[in-house]
Length: 397
Image 1 (cartoon, rainbow, N blue to C red):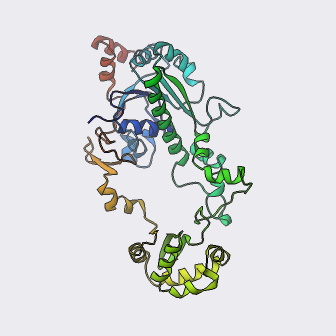
Image 2 (cartoon, one colour):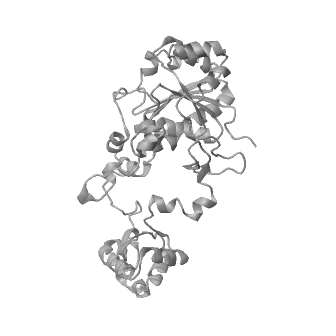
Image 3 (cartoon, helix red, strand yellow):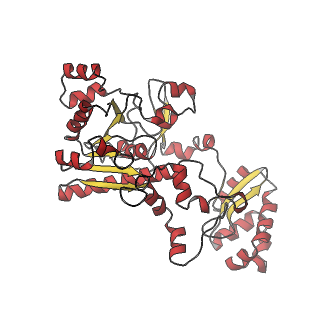
């Protein structure tokens, strides 16, 4: 069965991560994503994590979120390139960009211009602060937004100062929010027949992903603070504990789980200790309870404890490294990392985070080289070979 967005064409002007991550979600679900790049290409092609891949203009940061897409190069500073985009827009369902507000208008490719050509067009603009408000033209990258959104203020240990996440959290949140927004607009169009402007602000999206901490302050007046490796539940048995030569994270939140934890640790006697009789008492005696748990955990290594506690239905995990979790049989059974053939050999990439009973997401096409599909896309738009040759001669493409 065809995928949910089969037949949907997206003109993708995005670069770096927030934009490409969003368009990648729909590409996995069957959308024809036409990636429009400058002659230099998406900046993420060149990030120097691996020189070999950066020299190919296929850095891992680019490979991660650009499979299933096609690439065309255009110099949008040239009027002929703008005309190419307008012709492509007549047959497109979505235009998706993540420039600062005003950039596409200056290029002559803003929403009003393209909507006049194609009233059914959905135009998604992803930016740090959206197209309204006093910060609308302020530059924004992931680190700035992690800091500004309040996320860093509640992350890390109090003694160590604010801590950012170990990945581009706000970029991916912004991209996923944009994918939901575009999907919603496409569905609404089935009722109205009309396109619309979709304004995605990464700061807004970041706040939308932390409703609990925000409402604790706005509703209950509780200032938020760093809780280190503790749980948002504030329960003392939902935290990181030393175990043998490493660490174990427990997520013990119920009475049944607490009893099973104590018995598996060989400390059934703690169940009769008045200091640990209920959650209030356990919280008041957090330090004593931690000593009981860590003294027991010190007797074996984290992996062994993880196996024993999991068998006893106690939620827990060792701190898995990326190179470990990518080999986990659970991920293999769900085909989370999909292997595709590429010009460079087999390539494992992360797909979608969900499954459908039919027409589900998947990777069928390797990430494109820069401008790989230029002639193909222009031909589909009605350009004759001689016209394409002229566009190349004039460095438009």
